[in-house]
Image (tube, rainbow, N blue to C red; front, side, top):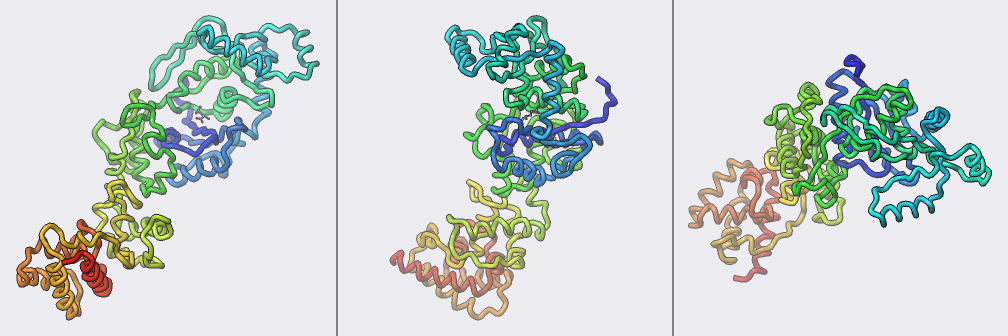
Length: 504
Ligand code: GLU
């Protein structure tokens, strides 16, 4: 392979579904490799399977790449000298290639009916034989072919696979790979509707678009010998290959819905930052030195190399992603975090399962005061199973009425009567304050707990539950300051009323 061939790589999704983590990891590795080597990153839509097309998939693919900042140099919407970049708009290219192979005796027309093929498969299964086309039409005479044509049967075009020998290629990750040709069947190149199969369209485009490296998921490794033989039959040099290791769930089986969300845009909805997700995805199969975990985009581009991609399956560990996302959230300026968090908080107000009555419109200045109190703890901008999402950490600042079990006000040691009386005194003393700053609050409430003869832990716990509805919240006095006098008062009073329901 020519070492100095300019790097041109592609991400070639089929719009048969919404992009998942695995697809976008492939896109990311291609993008990183292109950016690292000053090459081109191409987006090509492999939409030749018309039956499996999913509405909105192309938009979701582009939306995911854009959200992550994986810009493409050639492809839909940006164009480029090798277009069009939708395979459905390039059918004549594939038809001509298939025709050429037939003319050169390297491919043939197959007239087998779907019913015959089904019977063949059933028979193979019954006899425990490996599945594959039995080459029934491989040696049809011209007369037989004309007869079929005259019957109006539209053939498919199949590749004439060598019957023996082996196909060998080098993979940048897997090393030298060899397949026995006898295990490969005469696969279809062109379907009877004139659409190519993946194999034909894929290799024609990789050749015509001058793709230098094919980097894709491991599951395509077994298609590669077919591709190599096709390249050879067409007289073309094949690109380099790199098959990326599988992504596994924590139980080491292939990552799937069973392991939780796999759709890339679901991660956006859940409140992961694109920069954290990029960092996380980059480490699914690649590492710089087996140690470094946090990389910004520039560091990833600089450090990325094919040599450091491993063969072993990469484990998708959501805990690690949460940790990483938390680390990225902590690095944001409060203003940036507020801007990113606002849409999630807005959504939370509109969502069905959300507490009613979150103040509207959402006050950015108020949020800016809240951010420093929760930034360190937030792991996502949304919600997490461990209640560590920013929406969860922030929502008590916004709701009008807190919803909590009144018994929580008692903590471990207080009776309802005591709690009511302590709250009553606190309300009276607080009423006189003109300054509701954290220091003033502490200056008043700490001595008050001594005066009341109650342990600060119990007293502050009571105030915390009354003002936040939670037993664990950010530092009490800062929280009260941010909530402001009016909200605190309303909540303290509501708490005394709630206590009436608890009894003595
Ligand atoms: N269209 C194939 C896919 O959806 C592309 C595989 C390849 O990159 O060759 O994954």
